[in-house]
Image (cartoon, rainbow, N blue to C red; front, top):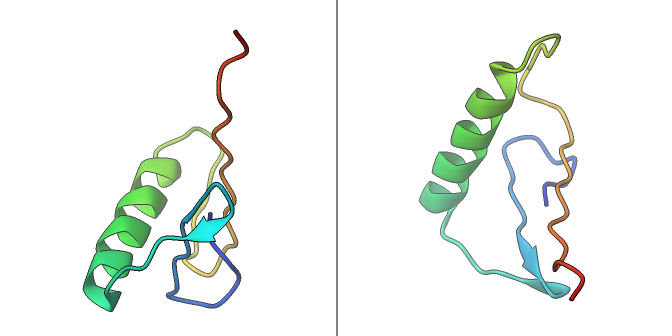
Amino acid sequence: MQEKAKGKLIVKIDGKNLPMHPFVQRIIRKTLLAMLSTLKGTEIQGDESVEINVKRAAT
């Protein structure tokens, strides 16, 4: 979901990039990093590469 470029957020849905303005990228990026930083044993520096994959439930 996020590539290694500092300050950049890339969201892909079914392999296609979701276009976002830089302002929206910053809000989502900072919110996601803030949520992850609250997890026990996690230290966020701000330059991490984070990848999240959400898969469809098997039916």
